Length: 284
Image (cartoon, rainbow, N blue to C red; front, side, top):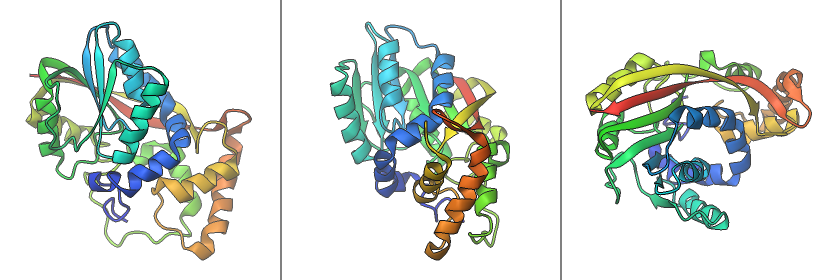
């Protein structure tokens, strides 16, 4: 099944995918939090910097950046989902965050008030452009000359044991694609190929590119989830395993839960390694 068929392109995030992320916000955010924390540490934000956060999702990274660049700095979170952006604003106001702003727009084409920014950041939010090269040329316009970007993107499925385990557990319940999917199609793993990612960045006007691996234990299915809870979440919300027929869903949940059980740590969840690339580059 292609990424487009699974609804993993940017246009889908404006609708059902954005609403799905919001409905499962705690599970999604806590699952990717270890890699997100590593990316924030890697970025080394400083007080006074003005930062745009691309694909900000539930706004957690934008709020964290806002704190890091205070006093004197500012963080703008940009996402294509109106549902997520609405929730971001509520979340920020509850935390009395005055140094953040949230904008609903398509990062592939938007002209954002405040651009060009000092820095650009994205935790798993830059891989969904229908045309990656055109999308990154627009991102380049958001960053001042000499400005730094920091991206977190997934390494390939074969390098992510959590995903391999999940896919193996449901292999008997999903129909494989008739033709291999385009590895560079919009979706979570669009930039798993670092040579392709480098090409996209260079043509957009970024240089001094550095890419390093980040391997962290992630609580699959969310922090504190039991194997059964994680399995239900994976099959209902993650949209990475293809469609399991309804009549086989209960069996598939059992198989996924069984596969996760050896990795369950009470109070923490189902801890399995996840691998991403931490990408740094300069606007030239």
